[in-house]
Image (tube, rainbow, N blue to C red):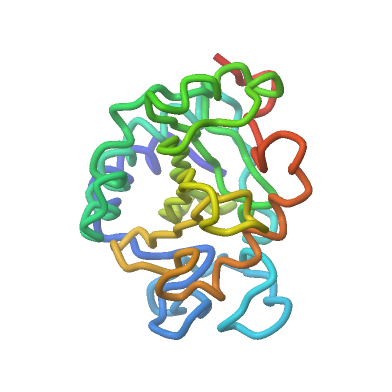
Length: 226
């Protein structure tokens, strides 16, 4: 159960937390290091080759947070998330928290390993705010989703940054010309479409292909839209 005492401790150790739903080891897709993770961290096993995962690792039985508590935790850890991602050298990682956020409170996403997510988009992706009516977003549109999880004992796991960038026509037909990039909270790159670790993010393309009619986009839950 997450208590005020846990919240008071989060700010002190958030920057040092490196537990991930996807990886903390140097092996592609490796499970969290038991020495770093909370004792109640239980991850589901990966489906397929760890170097070519079919989905995100999932935290088993995460703590359920109401919107107010989720927002409170995010206020505390958002700086640590940005600082970690920025170590990647990515301009998106440095800038995304200055963009418009499209959810009123972090929401849990089973397809992102039972992490709580926040959806940001740059000015080129302004139509993203129309949600299912957005149509095809223009080249240069960027969607960024940061993430964190909460265990039953109140442990906070800093999650990955998920980035979608609309590239020029011909970049990747199957992805709808979206480039998927996944950055770990310590700033290391997990994978990037048509780049380093491309196979590790192919499952992103596969998942978003189900949303081809919406330009491969998923949107925030209706009860959190702003």
